[in-house]
Amino acid sequence: MELIKPSFGLIFWMLLGFGILFFILAKFAWPVITKGIASRNKKIQDQLDEAERIHAELQNLNKKHEEMLAQAKAERDDILNEARIISQKIQETAKQRADAEAQQIVAEAKQTIQMEKMKAITDLKNEIANFSINIAEKIMTEELSDKSKQEKLIEKWVSEGSLN
Image (cartoon, rainbow, N blue to C red; front, side, top):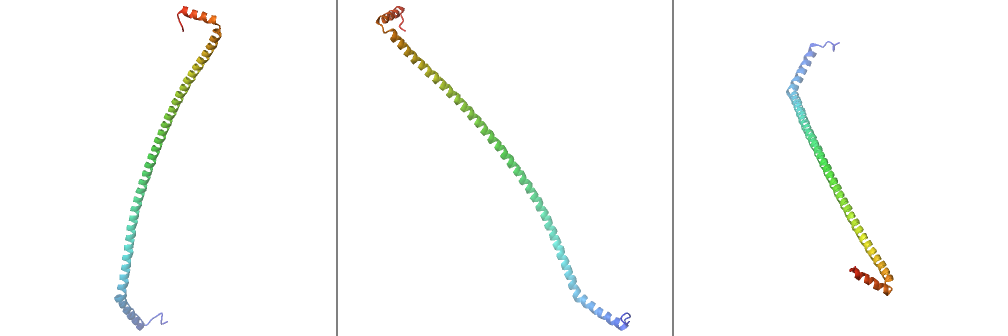
């Protein structure tokens, strides 16, 4: 029961020991502890401020990244549109060139056909003329084989006045 009801001497020595401990702690330990806590609080606050600054920088970088990405997409779209336009122009030019070449080939073919036709007609006329001359020669040879017939024909031509 002594522990439940302490005596006055025990309370006095306990208070004296607590006071001395409190004084020693207040004089030597608490300034170091409070200084450490303050230092730690300052360090934590600095780290929070740094984290906030880094977070703001990161958001700024994200905005710049998004702007650059949007700009890159716009440039890509411009390049693709320009390439599409150039491709269409090349196709149109090639088509026009092919049409012009086709028309030129057709014109040349028509001209060649016309020339071949004229050549064939000329050859045919020459063949007919040669054939006619050969027939006329044979007829004349046949007709003029007799001397009396030759004389009659010459007299007839002279009387007509034409030697054609």
